[in-house]
Image: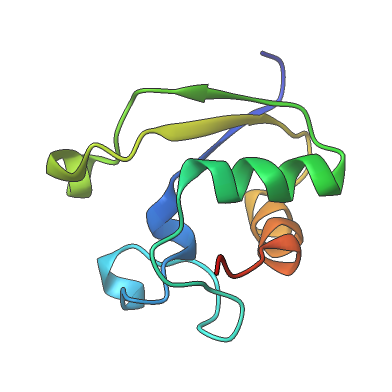
Length: 90
């Protein structure tokens, strides 16, 4: 995939501190995000993606998987766009 960007659920997890892997601000993060939440946010943002069963090296035991998104701009810009589209599951 050209211009690929890897996203892990821990990037958006409000239960984690920045040093534990959260990359978005706490106000934009959600508790216990799943790949489906991130996938839905990417669909709303109009970004193509695929889900893989690879895991974040620091959180390998949690087996969360990852999403590989088609993105040519900065990763932080994608993180902000996805976090603005994330919704809290009820």
